[in-house]
Length: 273
Image (cartoon, rainbow, N blue to C red; front, side, top):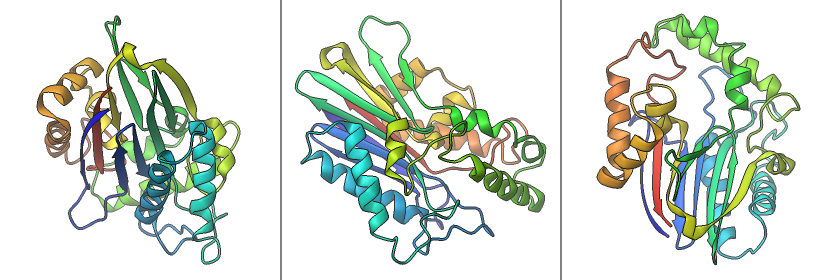
């Protein structure tokens, strides 16, 4: 596979909690779930550390293991947890977590795995619209708790407090039946991932997007998925991220597009299969 990518933190004074890495036949993207100021996580390392640690273990495992992507993810979550379970409370409801997207070519097959709300977009030959794979269970649960936060201007003290309340309410549904699933400390969540296999010769290209990059389409509505693929093909991942930033700067108070974060870490990878 030929892979290009771009990643940019929400702010230059904060660590990027996304992770992206590729090897010749696979690519991995993670989006760490940020912890608002004032919220406890039970972990001294932080979200960026978790995303980078799990991501690094995943990409290394993909060079060595012939197991399914589900099996690899489960083993890697277990390994990442073992690196801090003796210093941190890994069972804390706010313990660091991350979305996961994995794409691997094995011979004539293209395998994928998507856990939580990052997005995989597949440009499948013979279809007018791309195939879009994402897990919207977190978003569906979140609708119950967003009203107060979305009614407030972004950047205000009240909005910051409402975001913290929202995140802490969502913790009660994380990695539970009827809730949503994300990589954290329990390897069994890998079984909840969306997985599949396609003939590699039927896929023209693929895009892996953290929700900070996919928001150009799924939150802002400024492009279709087909148009997003065209942007990636013609201008590259950095151009997609630039357009996201332009949109965010045009709505600093969140009136047009209510959202928890005015700016979000944004990562995009474009793969020629």
